[in-house]
Image: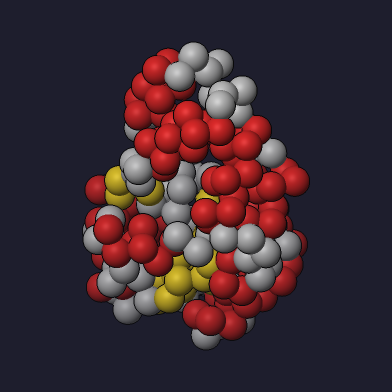
Length: 205
């Protein structure tokens, strides 16, 4: 049987709607004699990353754990982490324009992201707070991608059954999790996919 045409869009934040320039992180690592990607690798250690995304610890507590694991004196480590975290990325203009197109065509758009309690402030500072209809944050709902519970709650919040929702993410595990939960899902690797997504949502540019 053919799939139902999606009536709403769920879109990931990091790597899709928000992009990151690696230069600020590299500068902090060079200045502190850290190996390349030390900050990100430490932050993404599963035993501290998972509770930060699942709403079990705050962003500040997570970053303190990161600092405690760096091969620096603690004050220097905290300063390095604070400098790294002061850069909050930037919206991808092509993706933001697409989100606006989708909403203008009468389709709801939800931001569906693994995040900490810092998310709402980031959206305000990036000018994205009013650009989506609903924000689904793993920290707030206490479930993170790719768990089925995350997608069930996301569909509930956007007000449609999974079969009517299209999910876009740059993480293959999240895409597979969404499909397992009954959503249409597409793996993002750049703006070259936008025409396909417009067709999937039955909107014209």
